[in-house]
Length: 475
Image (cartoon, rainbow, N blue to C red; front, side):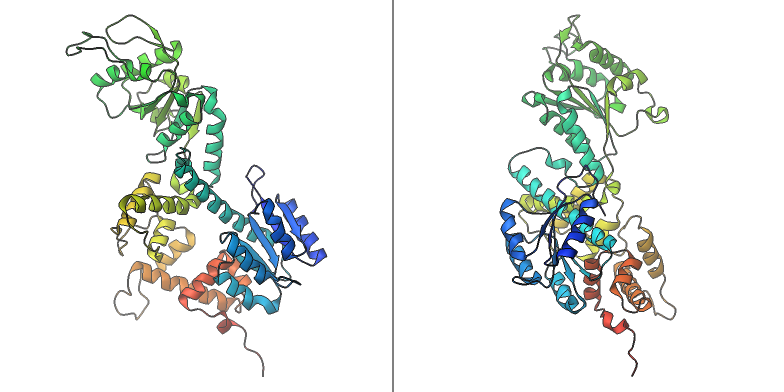
């Protein structure tokens, strides 16, 4: 996978003592949008680290002086998370496999096709971004910064953060649209904290949590005697947010009469509390959030169309978690770390069942659901039983589940839990694919469409030896 031109830091270090190979690989990577730092020796690369680390290291296995394995050891000492891809000859495959078991990302056997190089580097680059984002998150969290809730390396989250930063100081009203649990309040907080208004108040009101008789006074305020029981002056949320940001959550639930008054406030930038005819100017910025698409008349319901268009200066859509699956692992890791600190517990080891659940679950409750799942996981109360919902499974996984839900002919009873049965199907699928491809790892990778490291990890877990599937030699 090749990163797009607007993605950050596409830096690849290439170490190969063969001049022609080094030039050819550098040109291929450069054309794919990477900044390539090429070196003829391992020592040259190590010396260059004083000026910053690359995102991916591609290195030949056999070189004079420090060879690829020795370079790998040095890299592990300095940054164990740097993805390393080996270029190997046929006789070095065993060493490359052993290096992968010790943390190397992948290896390519000579001669390799250009698309294999670009695919391996692209996947490694994505992994590196995940690590760097995680580090940035920890630093931001420790430093009290507020942008970490918008964590993610997926394209929708990168675009969302960039847009928020771009409009934060523009003083325009913003409408946030997203399902429950997608982080609309966090986006509103970021809009406030990243703007010049951060010195003022961020005042929040959930429009769906208050009855109509209360919300008007909460928003606009009132004077003594404005209604029965109003014994003292109350400053409303709108006036209190002057100079800062007013966040109106679930605005689609706002009563029609209150909508009309809010429309006047947005048009005049002034408020008249209950019980007075005095107009008080307010320095107002409104961030409104809705879990329905107010642009769609069928979803808008009783919400005023003119108020929607008044709020719709800028609309930001927050993606559901199922559309940013590459962020799930990072978010889960962060939530587990936070929960462990709060509950004073160790983070448990991540078993296959939990890993599969994270990969396959639809997360209808989005980030909030993932947060609560992480907390239960740390507390040890997450029970992934055979009846646990795994969500909608993608093509190959759905095939596997369907296949194992029915016992094989002649098998007595139900053969273990769903997780065990899926594991058996997966192992058999790998064996069948290796057999069909004569033990060729490359062809098996292409058939199953998985990363080399993933395949080797699964083969090791299931005790699969590819040599058993190599063609028998004559004689």
